[in-house]
Image (tube, one colour):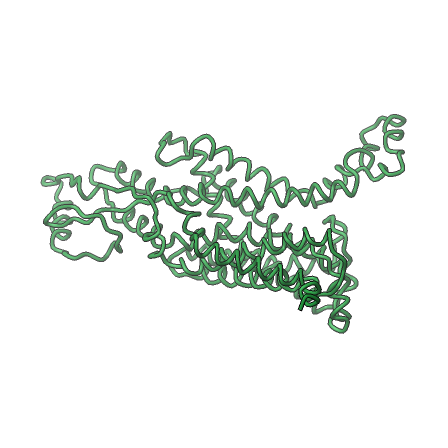
Length: 459
């Protein structure tokens, strides 16, 4: 028995930590605590015995006669009388009861739990990898983080596809653009695998060792991610536009405070910078290829021209690789930190709609704002999944890129003979992690440009 525990100590440690962390997340209700305290808004119902706050569909009403009478009074300009009770809006703090009643709450909780358990298991594997020898796929415990990681990625991708097809959660044009960019991503992925992978992107892999089915699978994965990231990225851009007060509304109840606004700016800048670090020639400008043999500074001093600076100043190759990995990690952490401000801005968008409709005319029509308030409350957890998916996918793929692939080669020689080398698999995981950041940065930047030009607007 003692020999068994000594042999499989890493596997038992990984299993016990994963089970304990899962029980801890469920017991402490961390997914609920993660969203606790945010403010949501509701319209009151007009009843004969007073005003009662309720979240209901705009077309549903317990008594249609008062509404019908109100419509008749609105049609008559001479008899128009502003109804203050119908124009009220209530602000409530989200609690456990509110969140559990929302659509996709169970899916959000399950995705949150399995993803963070998988990320924690991958972090533990990276720590143990520095203190243990390559003793086998099961003996060394790498089976647990790999299994949980694949389950987390599969769960998030399936859930993203499900929420993207939700009928009223997004516009039809957004769904159509998402499908279009998915096909465009497949085409770009095919071109990357077959043509200009090494000439445009600074990754250390060669697609020559991959057969046609493998390249097609990589292109399909890139297309799926490009399509699924479109709607979340546009929502992030809308939250950034509203939270940083690009509308110049000066409404403190709608925009973010100075700290949250700084986090939103930092998140966008880090994502954009990280997306550029693997694109040539910027990556070549930041690397000193001659730093190991000590001739870089001599060339710069001797020639003294900007043309010879390329490749002779900057980080070493190993240091630059570490910097890029830390930038990916920082971008994922900042996206998790900005999730609450982004979600609050999503809820505040309904408040902005109510405010605009209330002051748009002498006889405000609040049915649109009532519908928007209902939808933003109804699909609250759906939007949380969309905000949470990009950083979780980034962390999972980044964790895969740090796992030693020699375990697969040792224990699964037949299966591994059909696949490229382990270094390729790790670099591919890093490439997919960067691809998630890249498409998010492109969609977010393009949406902000359209907002700035006036082609899109928040209402």
